[in-house]
Length: 302
Image (tube, rainbow, N blue to C red; front, side, top):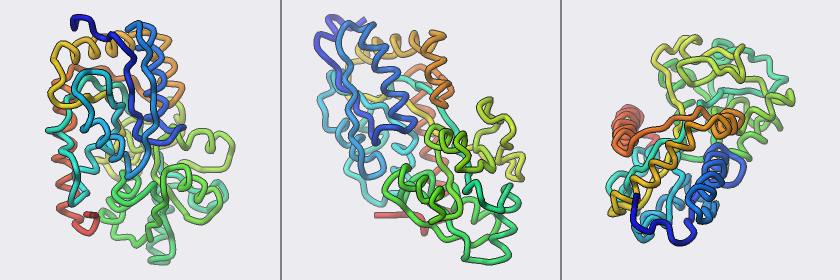
């Protein structure tokens, strides 16, 4: 255990607006850590630039354990799709622990005649360029997923980027766009309300939350797996003792039934890790998305 750490409150940066998966994960974990560490863990939403604003804020923080980031896969996706960044997504950070993961769902408006991925592909082939997909912004996973689908099937669907996940969801509900890939956390309430129809889930296995929704693999894409992970990062140079302290408490939290239940209820599958395991996940993800961008260079953005 780090000597005397923590001796004051800890700032947890959440790199997105309230309401999504990373926000839920941060608040659930932050409340537990506040109780166990004996110091307040204050969550702060630092939204903007596809989570880059939050990542940059952490990269410029002191490596003293008093500023931490609840990162999401976007931290790595950005490094693959952006031509220039003001920080190194790997080198400027130290991994603490994975917290969990959540898949995306491919959805359409509940009134749509499209009832499966096959229907979507058929409709797009019948009228090339007529169908649209929304995304939470350029360079986000919700843009990469439909572009991967287009590449694998040869269909022509027009992308419409929005300023975040919530506007993109509202666009599908309002019939401004025809389809959307986005995290189950943001979509589940609207599916439950009968406003959206899920066509497929992007994880290798079906979701207990929506057991009747097939996977993308079952829908004809056997290698498809685009889960979003959540995990805690600190600035590079942070003491290994501090990292070990945070890792222990995070892993302890993820063993507790009440914490696991809260995460599952939010649509997040709890997953603990060592710092090295989480670091490897990030490096492997970066290599994976770099290969995707090499194949689809038009997705590279400034």
